[in-house]
Image (cartoon, rainbow, N blue to C red; front, top):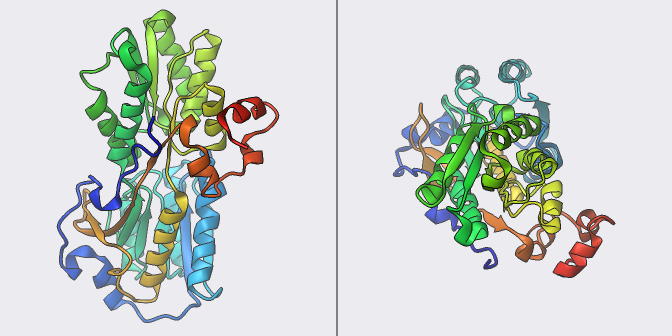
Length: 365
């Protein structure tokens, strides 16, 4: 596979980018113009959705904290809470942030619709909200994420590449993400746009809460229903679920290409071992930096014009100032040039004793 074959320029992202609206339409400018000017001693509320996926605690949180400190001469404070995949808990956390009088909120919603009223409460309290990674509903002032449709297309194209001439020789299983996550619907749509007509989908699931154990149970059901000799590949929307899927496949004596997303350490190691075909590498630093930059600007009553060059529409708002970050298809061929080069993992992180021989064979050392 060509190195970084599926990297996509942010300017070409196909996420229904809307035409630039007026300052009033975009939310960011109108919020900033009505906010009192603040200095560097700001308080940023950070609400992340869950801790099942390694990225949030390992990457997103520390990266956002670091960038806020950098942008505020070490005077800005980040107040953090994790909802642990519970939408009601997250709504309560918003209330707590309002009570604590944070200057701005960064919210990665557990449920994009369920958070809507809480976003409105924050706005009513004079607290702008930056939607992080998932496009929450309500009066959002800024948004940053990856092109989620392109993520699904990247996964689908990689699976087709892995299947080659076997694409229609059997059936694939599609393990999509949680139905409460708007990103999951976009990943699924992107994957279907590539796969439909080129493979036979035997079973398809929306996996509750993105949990690996739920993906594992679904995969066991698919194997029972389809027969292990008839499964030629699995579309998995992320690495955590891929782990549960591969456990089920191995138990049944099946070895087929499996996709993923997030470039989790365990996922990268499975790619090296030949158990997982690919993952989607989403550089977290640009996304985290963009969220921090928007949050600090909004807290300080500044325009988002220099930070957010794109506009997106949500089900409730139009022309939200946005930063869309490109993604890369991660395979055995480009581990050195992605997660290692970018400092996400060191060689020693990846190439533990169980994987050293495979790493050496791939030139990862």
